Length: 201
Image (spheres, rainbow, N blue to C red):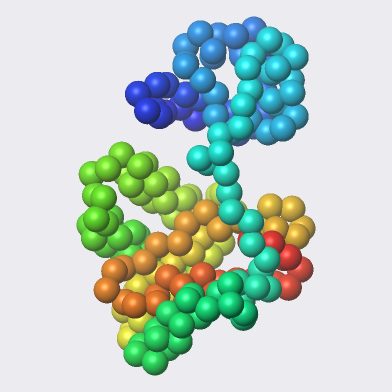
């Protein structure tokens, strides 16, 4: 059971499926609402008399992996220019985000939080907490990613997981500020190194 607060109301999430009807009823008595139900769970809850609705503010973005890796065409012109500016100014090395590099990724995350123009804002704090836990629990959660060093120093990372055979979900992309084009480069580079069997990111 995962619990939390959202806009002043309590919520719960059930990452391992729905319990028996009595347990669900107790959860809805204790919490204001449930988050992140699957389509099948939403239908089950509707049939049990609960209201289920889409939370469009939390929808994911879906991209073609190949388009992100190439950044060709007018649609990606601005992003491609930022990547080119990055290449023209910095030396960068990308490496797998292995256990021995987690400390560097945690440092990046701390810098990201310190540098955020919205520091102290609850959404930033919530994202920070989730990102830190994902890094610390990457192996047991079977997350994988890449870390990027600019001029020899840790600068950015991407972390995610496979969602089915054709889709890779990038949960976090974090980087330090002051490096023009860094995050556009990370986004493109990570899509580029993912196996071609992934059609979507």
